Amino acid sequence: MTDSRVWKEETAYLSGVTEALQTELTGISRRFERGITAADEAAEESVRQMLERRYRLLRRAEGSPYFARVDYTEKAKEKIRIYIGKASVYDADSGLLVTDWRAPVSGLYYDGRLGPASYDSPDGTVEGDLSLKRRLTVEGGELRGYDDIDVTADDALLAPYLSVSADTRLKDIIATIQAGQNKIIRADPRRPLIVQGAAGSGKTTVALHRIAYLTYNMGKRFRPEQFLVLTSGSFFLSYIAGILPDLGVEDVPQLSFEELARRYVKTPLRLHEPVETPGQDGGYKSTYEILSDIDAFLAAEAERKRSGAMPLYKRFLAQAGYTEPRLTEEDLAPLLYLRIRASGLSEPAVRHVVIDEAQDFSAMQLTVLQTLFKKASFTILGDLAQGIGVSGVKDWDDANRQVWQGTATVLYLQKSYRVTIEIMEAANRVLDRLPHLPKGSAVVRHGESVGYIDVWGENDRADACVKLIEKRRAQGHINIAVLVSKPSLCKGFARLLRSVEDLCVFPSKDGRYEGGVCLLPAALSKGLEFDSVIVADADRYSKDGLGTKLLYVAMTRAMHTLDVLYEGEPPF
Image (tube, rainbow, N blue to C red; front, side, top):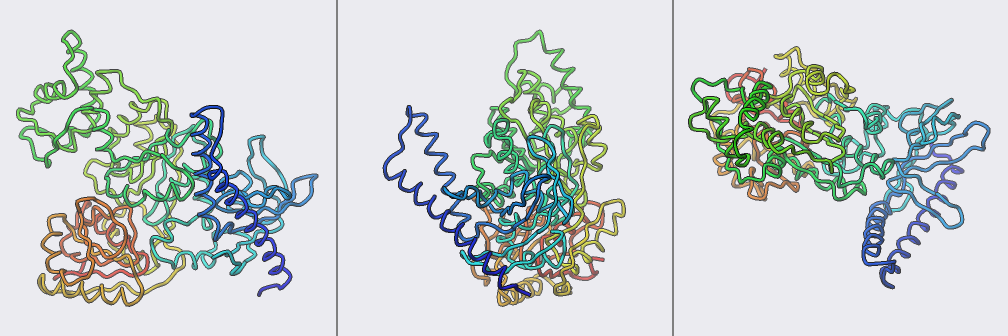
């Protein structure tokens, strides 16, 4: 029930914040009109960039400058009202009106319960009493509603945020950060951090918010360009590219592992599809054994003139029994390691590395990265249930011991905020084939039952997909994915879906997904989310470990509806 007194009070405060925000925006515009003046050109450019970043951040916040309020009384002091939003907002007379969500005191909203509460500040722990915790809904510069709450993790409170479209939710989770997620965001960066998170638990957005938090609170130690976001493939990077700028953090390098290796090897690389080499263990290039063999090889080569990383690596492969070496993705990590060891290469400019979808990295790859970025701290995020890389990590505790000698902190996010209960239950039934893997649980949000459709032949399969796309579009769903089991199937199946308007087919030339209906292989969908998902050929996923995980990945991309097509035997 809305209290008229509270509504009047909150409306008046919002009016003051809006006025202050607009005043600052106008002031920045006028400074640009007059021209920026400083001691020299470098100083002028620095001021210009700072003002441009501030202007963009305020513009993003102007329609919804804050989302929460807490009333807090520090010991022996007066009670203060703290409004929390995307960016701080100041008034010349009243001072700070809105506190940035990254500020230490904002942790009271995410972690604190009513009653005695504390938060960690640069000067130490602050003790006090939390008397009000209010969620505020502000849209288009107007107050739409409020709720006085005790915790932020109540499923009913999250429901309005989880029912929106995929791209809206991805870019704006600040108001819904949960205590477990907040613990990761604000974790001590001096220790390696490993996060095991279920599908849809917010691993990626939490990792990016962690970067925003660290740049805000430890700007002298962590500048945006000193971070590196790394993942197994470039397609996923294009999907998340806009999130950091939306959080007010720009110029953070984001690379796939292949792009990173090419950058540091400094040799043109032509990669081939993996092929079996007679007499060789197919996993050799992903093991620690190859690293020790490279060390021994370089020690033996010490007397010879160095001849570049690629010639050295080819000589190493020849000695290892690869008579006709054809480089594949498996060679990237050992080649990079050889380059590091041969030249003494290290990268001190990078201070913090965030590795997403880390379950598809081998422990050897992680070791190579730690060797390259000796002075950097690491945040590692992944889900063992989505490990579709043959040589990927199988156990985080083992990886912790092998790479960081057990010094990393391991945290868990097992609740999925993406999928409905019906979708998670269906995906977990597939995962029952691999009982040793961690399963996720969905928040209390119900939706349509998962649709299972038995098809007969490719034309029937395609017709069913077209009808489902039309149905989901009619329901207002925008981002819809048709997922197939193998990349080689995309081109042929796309021809059968030619009647679908504005269909995007991947892999595409530019490798970008900007919304709408798309057709892509399940492996490329890892890390993405869609309003609706159609698993077009569930019958083609093998029932071994890899096939099971890949089908699980495909099913857990769906936020609201999931349809599973199969021919013959049901997927479980």
